[in-house]
Length: 119
Image (tube, rainbow, N blue to C red; front, side, top):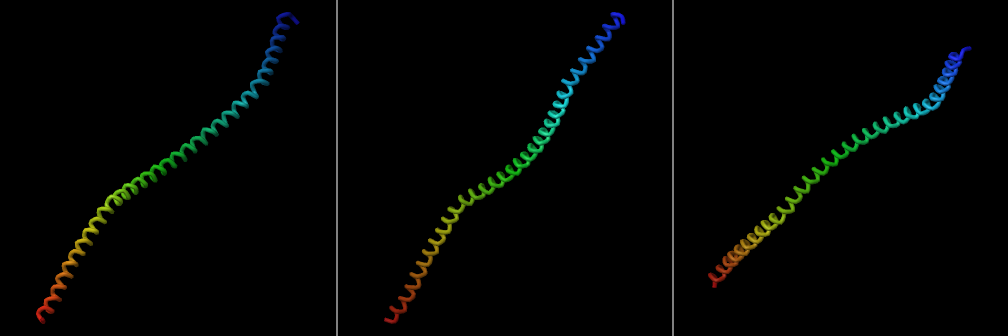
């Protein structure tokens, strides 16, 4: 075997050995990367689902908050109008009492007149 052939044979064995070593190192790294990629995709999907669910919940909460605001606004208006309505009712009752007092006085005068006429 000539020197060139030995060098080529030696180089071939070296590259063949290096190729095997590289495979031994790269294959587990490749499998690790594939596993990490699968986990990352799974996490991304879970995040997207969680994000979507949170957005739905936020929309529901916004609608509820809007409803509560409307109810508070109506309650506030009621709280504002109830005292006014009460004052109006009190005035009406006062007017009715005053009117009844006049009616009583008029009836009393009518009852007193026949007694004087008979005297």
